[in-house]
Length: 78
Image (cartoon, rainbow, N blue to C red):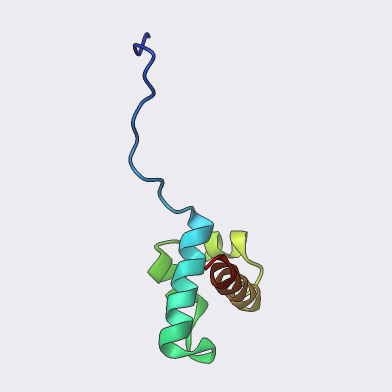
């Protein structure tokens, strides 16, 4: 189909599943502390299953490391 040479306009990109998990973990770790946050609560907050969470991260420790890396990257970007 000919679109008249125009690109389709799309809305803002949605965060990836991995990014949603990281953001959910970051939020929960800040609110409740690492030790009080369960993998179940991270998965629920990110609207994913535990299986999906574990597909992206081997452990809660790996997820903590990723949230720390995200914070570091944001801090150096400013």
